[in-house]
Length: 80
Image 1 (cartoon, one colour):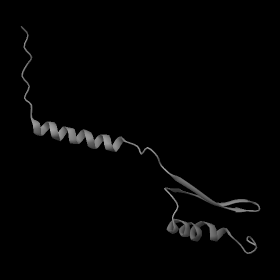
Image 2 (cartoon, rainbow, N blue to C red; image 1 turned 120 degrees about the vertical axis):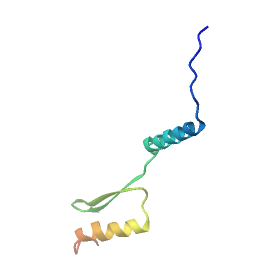
Image 3 (cartoon, helix red, strand yellow; image 1 turned 30 degrees about the horizontal axis):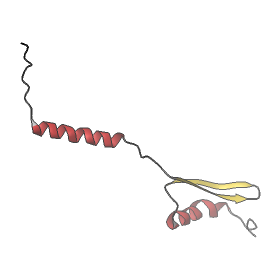
Image 4 (tube, rainbow, N blue to C red; image 1 turned 30 degrees about the vertical axis):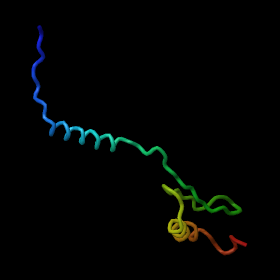
């Protein structure tokens, strides 16, 4: 009759190990879906000021895009 060696079981260590594994699994998980928003200006001679946002466009992002990217490349006569 073969007997297995007795192993000390510690519920505290077991719970701590499960929390560590769960934290590692959360770090390794990637989002199921990421939204990327591409915005650009279109002129008669091509595309100007292309920019990509991670996530959806909102008013704050749109106004920031206008101030930092689009308005500096527009000149008088570009719009009717």
